[in-house]
Image 1 (cartoon, rainbow, N blue to C red):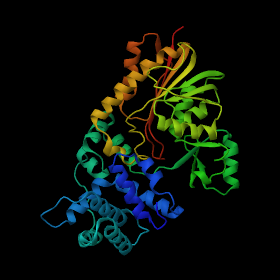
Image 2 (image 1 turned 30 degrees about the horizontal axis):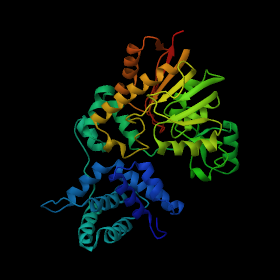
Image 3 (image 1 turned 90 degrees about the vertical axis):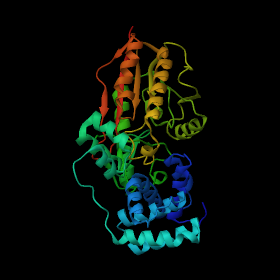
Image 4 (image 1 turned 180 degrees about the vertical axis):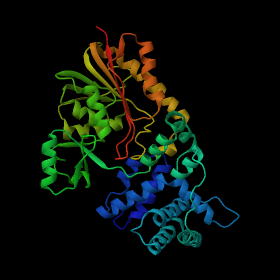
Length: 419
């Protein structure tokens, strides 16, 4: 990223990368490098906001277009979204600055021919309020109001009803806090270090971790592996499945990026594996800082890299639709499809079947997701137990619905193998 690149150019770069099928977090990491901290935050906010509010931004753009309406090039469309987002959601950016900066962006990135169009649309938007959605609450009106695919809202409406669906949509459109969990440091050590450094922080309402306002690499304890970045719900799920263990032999079968493996190291000897070589590199980097003594292996969980009946705990933090973490992944709602969910369900079933033999008698198979979809959660466990009668639920499942304090959603089940 060139030194002269500004936050709006960087935001457009992120949106381009997402269009090219790159995940938002990866696109952000590779695009905003070199910006000052305030510009990094602004680029992040604009790119994430455009993805969260894409449908409502497009409605305002379409309403401002003169007829006949023409299909806009993707770069022009994203430049307009960047401008309309600033006008609609960023109070700290004056309207004239939002218009002018976006016109300049259009000139640089799209060419002079689109400058009059972009200028005209943004001036119309800046002088006219957005139409509000009135009438009865339905999946269609909620999808329009909160900028989500209607098919997805209909699914949640069926599973959770109107009130819970709206709560989930509000969560997805919120700005999630940055949460860190103690790793090589205790919670008291981490709290004391943050307090000494004058870092604004607060314990999460669930009691798991601290929300912080700072850049991760600038936090005390980063180099020492004192903490990991992990949402409070994910820590809660891990505690639910692993807290009673001590001195255990553990296999984290879908371990990247390594946060759970680092915490599991406090319970015993840990093997962390993942099928993706790219994710394994990130796992190695994270564990080098937080838990260097964890064993690591590139392996497909469907074909266990360990001997049968040798593990006290096998953790499957399964690849899933991630519908409980959409606030952190604003592009995910537009990537997801029913066929994708069904593919995830099949993959999860294959992984569970592949790891089962590694669990020793009276050992635990822990199954976690960050999904809100029953097919990936309790129904997946039900199917596994039907096909593996030597396992049974060890107590009830834990399902965490995204909360108003910003915590994500997720699911966990403890499955114990018979003697």
